[in-house]
Length: 455
Image (cartoon, rainbow, N blue to C red):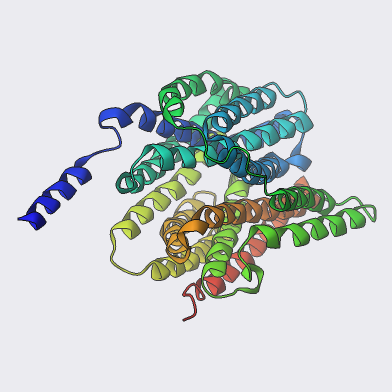
């Protein structure tokens, strides 16, 4: 009888949805915030060729993406300690406010340098807001509901992935690229207001006077500054760039070990390889994804809207593969390795397709998107399973840092190759960049073979 009652109680608990009862406003607020961040991230990839042409800034094309990723890395680490000390309310509000300021700066930019500065400000806001929202989920929802909340956050990326590139292209063509950024500003207000009751109900931190982890903060500053100097030096400034490149390598080399699990750069089995695999696959995938619109519009005469369709196809592959792996009984290691292989094959296929026919890139990049769908969720599950409870936050932060740093460095290095090739040899530059992305994805396959922790 007791077992029956316990089973009925468990069934009642599992019937609670994220939009039920007192959770509706909080859930809607979180989902809408993530949807807006996702839409901006997806749309900007489509409109960047238009922005670079309008502001005469092809040489800074990659910095439109790398600046956001680098500052997001910095704010992710800094906001983590702030949230632990003061609770998530102030960091979340501040993060959204800074994100809005970045939208305004980018949308009103009169030069490519100002636009890049706006994108950097957006990254600061995004990093802080995302860290704070994860803590809101932990504080507001009981443990048996959190998996549904994270599933809803994944679903919040689906609609922006489907329509973001196309809508961004239409806005850029018929209204102006600036409204891709300025038009989002008023849309941030409603979800922020929906989150106010939940933020007020979260009790203050029980460790407001806890000292900040200054070593970790300094490491984050060193990595962010080092990545910035490294990317700037790679753009090609003669011999004067050599000290910048060396200083950048030193900053990343000194700071990164403090932010990642020990043995990550040495392909150590288990948790370090989980983090490394995510970073390598993110770098290869998003590096390729960033330059597909440029190749389609410059080499094949695509409009911004048509180029966005190719990115949408990849997003569909990501979503379908993610749903499939989530329902499968196969091991997470299997899907992580399958995803790494698919990403590698997709990068090779799309690099070849872009030399032949623009529309051939769509089915090729569908394979790459499916690879990320198989791998990303599986690697997240593996990370939590390999992490002691008191280290899940730090290790989750390391996973996000690996994603961000891998993407920013790869995009920046490829941008330097493309900029060095010039418009006259753009096709060759993009092919060389594709070879770089392929090599990085292949390393991701090697790392994916080492995901099981040693006994």
